[in-house]
Image 1 (cartoon, rainbow, N blue to C red):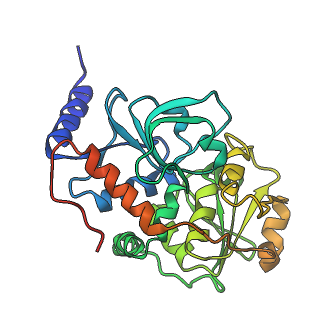
Image 2 (cartoon, rainbow, N blue to C red):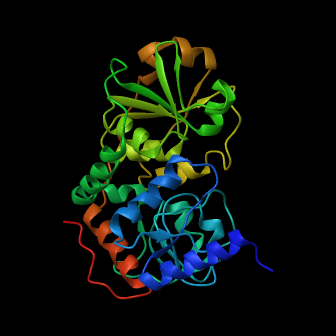
Image 3 (tube, helix red, strand yellow):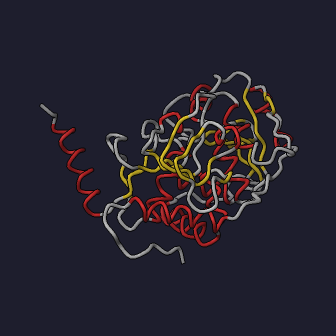
Length: 303
């Protein structure tokens, strides 16, 4: 017999299906930046919101995050990637994937539009109307004033790294002259911090990709004393494979240097400019949303 919680989940899913919600696979454990950002982009686009399907036995979208090891024959891929090398996986369709590493391990039955392009889901925000839409959405929610930390050079640490160094129970800290924020911080707060920053340094992938997309200089770091993150460097080099002639190097930072080095931590911060077409990626997202909604509504427009 199903529990009350299970019955509620099933009823909620069926309700969303009936009103045209978008079935979106996303990680829903610890509230991590990239996972919540992907959900929110779709929530901002879809008039009926998104829901996480209880099973993957029907059509569903996979958008932001290293989730392709969970893909199956019902998956429609929009910018996700693999976290490690696996045997090729067959999916229903793929519009774009994070990088060449992921592309070679994906066998789509169909490739709508112009075939499988290389782009991370975050890079959809290179389309100005969509960026404005999500920025307005977050700005209305954010309660943090920018500019309170001098030059607004910030360190963004993966929530696992942050917890190891600063402990649980908070998402911001001061380390010497550095302002440090966790990827477990409220997504609207972290988005606004990155958008308003002069430069960031991060050991997490999606803050770096967002910074690139917003043309904010950034630097990939690892804190030597921190625990190795799941998947290691694989997803970073997958992202870097979009531009094979542009080296992508991780900078190891001892903990005492993170605390004491001041602005030199950001030396060498650069922007890896997105060379794709943000409008095309946005059109792919809309195409996939309209194709998966269980009831027909008028087309969704970004402007």
